[in-house]
Image (cartoon, rainbow, N blue to C red):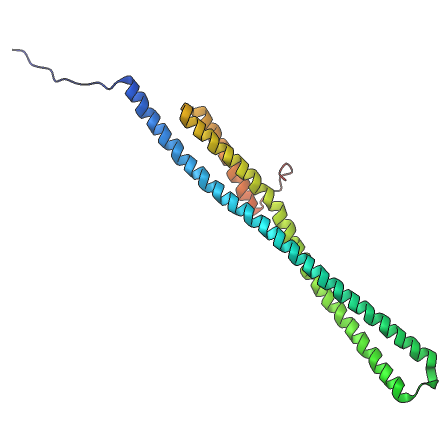
Length: 199
């Protein structure tokens, strides 16, 4: 009595390699999509830092122009007050009492205006310096986003090449590059470190 053996088909070794390569390809494709998301975040962060730098610079310039106007106005009032004081001193007792009284009132008013302009200019100067601080902070953050984008773009290229060549080494290199790009992007947002080679 003979028993018939069931036909068992063993997969072709080339098919096994393709299946194995397909799993690698899917993994790399998913990881590359994560790189792209981080790249988009880095790009938005860099764009916002640039916009904030430009806006803060414009606001600082506006405040400094306003400050200059106030300082000039205080200077004009001081010169006018000094001229009136000299007139009073020069004419002395020969001046009529009502004219002397009007000049004294004008001198007091000019002195009050001068003090007011000086106080306002101080507040304006503080606002201008705050805008400059914001400008400088964003200017300092921007290169981290630029460098992060560069590393992430290279990581995407490396991972794409690793799919075509099924090279795990290239994929590992892309992971290292993406980690560096991600850390630079994170530092752009958080300003945790001041790296001398960035910028």
